[in-house]
Image (cartoon, rainbow, N blue to C red; front, top):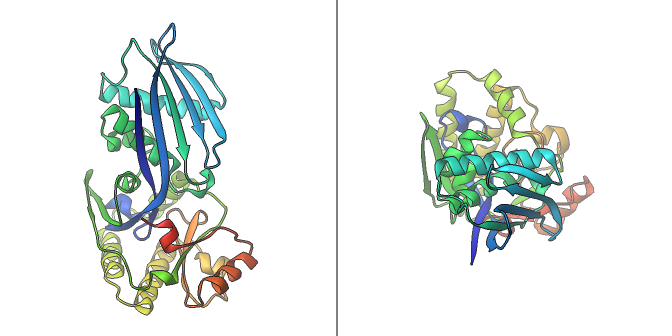
Length: 307
């Protein structure tokens, strides 16, 4: 018997950092995600054999767990093994019937995007494990990585969503974000995968109990969602970028790398790495050439990446 689960990757268009404190955020599920396949296997003692494949189908991690005591028997990377063990143990505590103690399992995960892209290697994993274990993915997240949970909402969504977490209550809904100027929107990978925890810690040091800031971000999210023209969208995205930069005293990515670019460039998620959004009316070829000449090879059109 084989079970297969799937989760979408994610990008956060608005509300970065502030979504942690209740700001409304516009989040975009990706066409690329992660698949997880589980098979029952015959072994003398109950074990869980785990294999993780990258987007090229190459094995990047393996581990074996003893299901009697739920201890690690062997692994190829200790920290990854410990992290995975923690996720599985939390899932098992939420659903004591997660594993059949008389069975053994072979689990294989397969990413559709490079691990360094920051599109949700961890969130897609948690979402898939939660589906398998019939557990609440947000409870697993809270007990492991922490965070707002918008990435888990994206994992199971079929299009753009508005996401909000207030007083530990999560609300998200499908929204109509399909701008007429999609052909003018691009995503560029900066090649510097960010540690979200470091970004969150910096945010917490800078922003403490300031509800007016949260309200401002929520208003910007609503306005960006309702944008009818590229010019209006660019104006609002620039306002969002200015606001985050000023509030957190962080340099804007355009000032750092793309000062002579005529369009808007916006950081997505943790500032300083991962993907950025760029707007351009130059057309695909000229826009791509600009970023390639700057040394940024990963260049994706909106419709190629966003669900």
